[in-house]
Image (cartoon, rainbow, N blue to C red; front, side, top):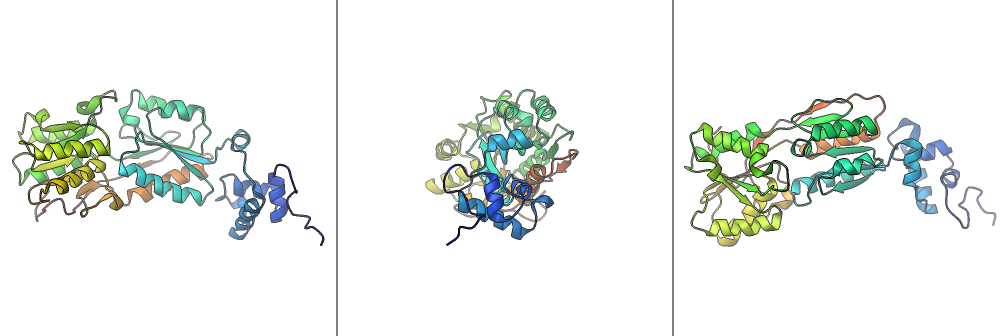
Length: 351
């Protein structure tokens, strides 16, 4: 039986030309489909994209990302500089970006430390989200340096910056923290902040903007000394849980708590369940930041956050990855609102 002239070579390295020949498309079209630019018009119709991907799978074609980056200036991937793997917020965002990125043949990489400048300076990526711009030394200057080098696909999560050659997502929880404090203080004499030990960061826990916003809210109502209302525990979900069990079991058990992050609220919820404290009757708490539903074990947690935040953030990052040519930076403002759950007993007229 005659061999199909478009079939792959019997041995040796499979090339992009082999894929194009098998799919019956031009080399340029195959390149667009498999290079992370599948959303481009040059990649052809959806039927063409399916044919190219099927041919690549059949032949076992593996793109050389390094060569591709050298040729196109694109790395075929998205970097999320999250700083930690402990926060459910970051896990949920990564899941959303991964699912959306795969539709455009883009991979997703997570940086779990604060060395994002060093990594991105030498990496070829299609887009990168940096979440700790405001909390590392000279963060805004580092972003500008990256944008001036190779990274037009940058998205900076910052309350301090304006867009330049990169997008800026501005989402400040300061007003939300003030409202959370007032909400709990309306029915409790003492409201405390559960905060992680951030000694590895330059400003530490008490220099962090969220802590400062809490202290301002307490002092505004004449509560204090405000610093004594901050309960600092080790960073990380497991250590926070163990510390919360000890806190809730001790003589100074809190009645109303604002949690610095969503993962701390989850840990506090688990600790309360373990030692039999009724929520919200004996303990009310609110998370600052979205709490993914998959991380909640005993009913939804009340939180201040941004509606549909993961989908919105992902769409901004993906847009930067697939369309970077001559595109000015944009400012995306995310407003916070209260989402009541089972960890608060809210009433009409609350702020």
